[in-house]
Structures are given as C-alpha cells and as structure tokens.
Image (tube, rainbow, N blue to C red; front, side, top):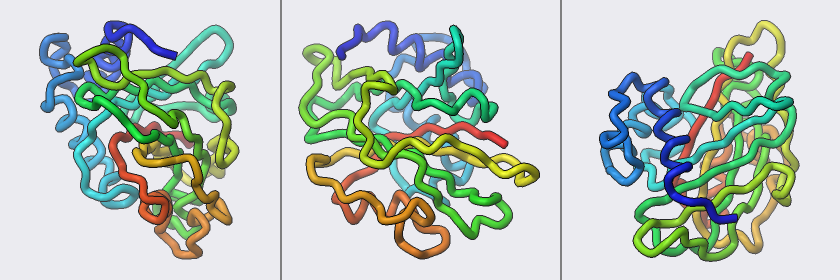
Length: 225
C-alpha cells in the first residue's frame, strides 16, 4: 500500500532525534539527506550492531517498525525500550528509500544477538522473523524513491514471527530489524532459529543473507529485558 511522502518523513524525523540527540529542525532531518543515514549508521555502530550483527554498511533506507497494543502504537527508534507485553504481535512496517528507483525485492528480518544474554550469547543469534515484504517495484512518485507500508497481519512470513522473550535476569537484549534487498521469490528458510541454522555461535542473519544473495540496506533496533 502506497503512502504519501510527508507522513513517513514526520514519523522518521520524530524517531531519530529522541535517540541521537540531534537538532529537531525538520530541514536538517528530512530523509533525503545523506547526513541522516550517517547518523543512523553511527547509532548502529555505537550499539555494536554493525560488527556484532551486520557488516559495515551505509543505510539506503529508513526502516520504521511499529508495535500496536490496544489503541496505542509505538515506533521502534534506534534503541528505545519495549516491554515484553508490547511486542507479542507482529509489528507493522514503514519503509522509505529516497534514492531508490526500483528494487528486485525487499525482505525484513528480526534477530537477537544477545541470547540468552549479551554477556553469554551462546545461543545467538536467534532468528525471530523473516518476511518478504516486497517482490516488485514500488514507487512512491517520480523522483521520490521507493516507499511502502505493510500491516503486520498482512505479511506472509517465511519464518513465523517469534515474540521477543528475554529470560529473567539476563539484562537488555538488542532486537535488530534488518532490511535486505534482492530477489526473494525463492528464499531458503533457516533450518533452526538458533544461530540461524548455521550451528555456529555468533552467526546469524549476516550469514543467511549472504547465502541468499541479499544485501543489507537498512536497520533499526529496540531493547527489551
């Protein structure tokens, strides 16, 4: 389902300053400026997501998952905190790629590198979700890039959504949403959630994506305990 550009910009610009403590001037934070992507990359580096989970990459797209609980909706915003009770159901997803004209396919994944804890991630990474969200070109408007919104219930999962559930006393876990680009019409499902089927501690979505010929183009994350 297509969106108009303005609501997406407002959602994304509302999320970024809360975490990165950057000026709230909308002209500075308009999601068409490369500087905004550098701020997102910096946040991912600071949280050691680039390194622990993802290769060194520069985001091309804004990824804005949001969880609904009752009448309230809360967006994932680069490290904000969620309670277990708020993430039981699949999130909705808004994606905006300002400089992209076409795409062969987009896939969203959710992974936990901190299972059972960040100090002892012997089960990490844990695969929590894989869903192809776009199989064809989706253009918001000439010169406006690729943009779309999907509701959680409308997504056909490749790997069924597993709600985050950090064991008591294990501290905060990083739950990382990863946007991948590439042909997603014939993806292979990981054989196991633990280690994404690799059987190797510390391995996960990066290995799976490489094996499927997918490229990381965006990411966002929240923390939960």
